[in-house]
Image (cartoon, rainbow, N blue to C red; front, side):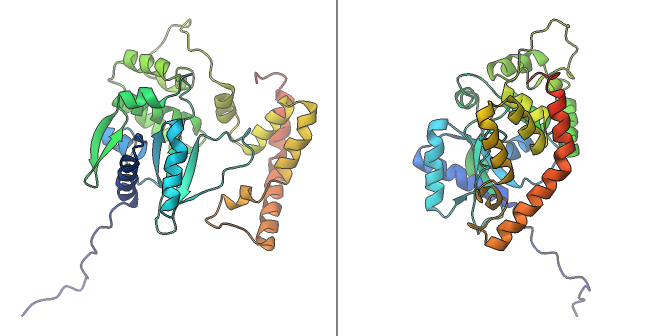
Length: 304
């Protein structure tokens, strides 16, 4: 007689949807002749550059000229582009997030990457030092180790107001403690990341006071010095010409519906839904007003 256990057998493990999606988007890019590099996600995991966790999306980098073509091809396969924030001064566009009703993860298609500010663009230098790994029985191009480190560093620094990203930066510093920092400095210089990645690089080795880090772009300083949207908008309003200030104020208070649609998977919002989101926006803005006013008061003493 067979003795039955009172506990049912464990269900088979469900594959990580981002791994399947990574293989699928790389296959699609190869089919249409688009060069594509998978960044963050499985690349960081492959090199052990971050604590283990399941990614919420698939991040890929393509050449600027191929960006529209890949998005169009994804569109023919049922993928939709999430609207971006219409205030592109406060939220400069660097990628397009694509979602599909039948997939549990987005594809974030980058044509540039904040913190990597090389004048000639970053795709070609990263492509030149790419390597290949296998994912879902599909060859996948990922950045070389040093490039993956630089991407991870500027990503964590950009969001260092978040505890999780501070922990990721600490993890990356420990992971790179035995590496030759000279190689990281040289590559950071080539990718235009010396100034943005400075908080990471300085922790690996003490530098003489006169070391020339260069200067990060105004966009990078805006992203890292003012994490709250109200702070960014206040700073940009202060810097704007008088005739532009009314437009910026109107966009902050009465943005188009796409500013709210981007937070959902819906294609449109009804009048009641839209009204509710405007009210919540104004309420958040009122709570953040003291911080915004503090930014305006300090702007005379702070470098823009």
